[in-house]
Length: 105
Length: 233
Image 1 (tube, rainbow over the protein chains, first blue to last red):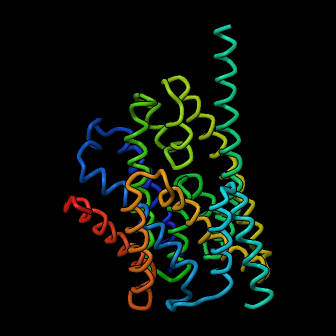
Image 2 (tube, one colour):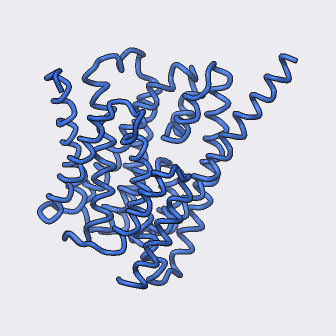
Image 3 (cartoon, rainbow over the protein chains, first blue to last red):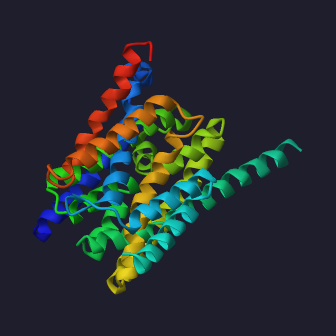
């Protein structure tokens, strides 16, 4: 991918995400009262975030791969279950991942 | 008496906002590092944090680029995740009641964390205070730490790289988590949709171009919508 393509992606995606934010702040009140709209917007982040968790933890170059990242993810889930703060969860995941890489690969 | 209570209340709101903004903002180190490892320049990584300023979309974008995805897949997954902020905006519009240029400026800071601290407060004055204090702290530290991470990543060895690879899925899990635990809205549907999204994405990874499986995972929403219209579920 050429550097100018990357620039277009960066600027285009930044403008798009800003407009999405502004749209919400400017929309007429009451739009969230439509049950189907509300449900759709409440649920879409769960689908995407779960997909991002799975793909980033369990795949590499288009193939399913189980490695140190899974151990780190389990550790992060335990930390989240114990209500650890965000930054602590990330430090634990990073630490377990690094350890797993050194020990087992 | 009344006014000193009011002052201490304001101080608490600012303290909460600034400490959350600072803590989460430091996580920009992980973004800066991930982005440069994915092939972006330090400038591009920094500009994303400055102009996009919504972590999940930023990580999704560089993740798709790193795995060799198309521009369409990269921008598409960032925008789909960005729809979340539209919803936050709808909720914040009434609370903050900004007009004109203030609204145009405030929109940039409408994200997970600022929404979480703002909706907790009651009344326009405290809501605005929570929004501005968390937003300014987070914006400042997120951008500074992005630059630090982007510069630092160039000296990363394989062990630090492994740590970074492990932090990214954990960060997405941390964003997802509040939707899956007791007390969340539509808890049952959220869990079904999350499981469906993960399943679809994994199943399609070997087949689709990188990044498209994330967009396809949005179809899992239908699992949650169908469950509601039948009524009995």
